[in-house]
Length: 266
Image (cartoon, rainbow, N blue to C red; front, side):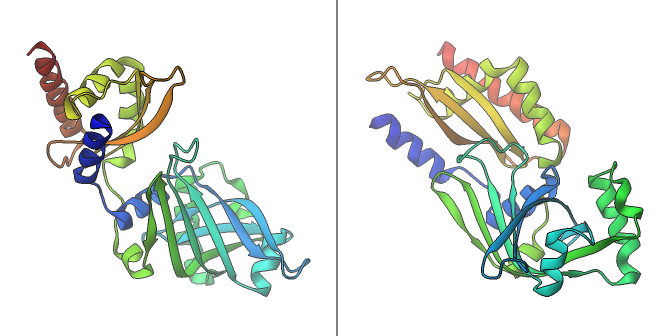
């Protein structure tokens, strides 16, 4: 119970980006695929679900290109109201982030299609179908609701205005590469940093799932003394200060690792 209380207090005080930036960041750096639910034209009253490719524009509005023959194209032309569910790039389960956007997806005006093509190809460079004559450009121009789940006990909503004004976190764009390097070569350092940040919390494995300008999210594995079943949970491991550049991330991680090693000696 003492360790649990210490963990809870640490997590409550750990700096986080805030929901609007978290949501905008997740959508910006997602792998470019989502689940779109439309109002089915063929089966009135039922939702139609499709896995679709997308790319966010500079306002975070998802941009799509659909075949004229697809069921979701026909659904949207009949009723533009839909929702799009987008999972974080590292999504593996309930502890990982996901966002649901509700709004209206409509055809992009002809004069804007070249710009949408450039945005889409930046996310999907192999999308040769963007030049097919029977494909149509769509965009969620009107976002009416934004729901966010960042993991266990971290969920809420963001207003459309908050979402539109938020910017993606710049560090998160290359945070995956940093996480992979740390997980493959320096997991012992991550474990030591956790032990230093939350005294008494000893974990057997610590996998960094994401990195941003204020810190890291880490999936921990530990086996409680009174059990032989390992537990997995995600914690926030904050940096001592905000970082602005890639080199800054390395510097703070080295600093945190040295502090953790020094604490072990003492």
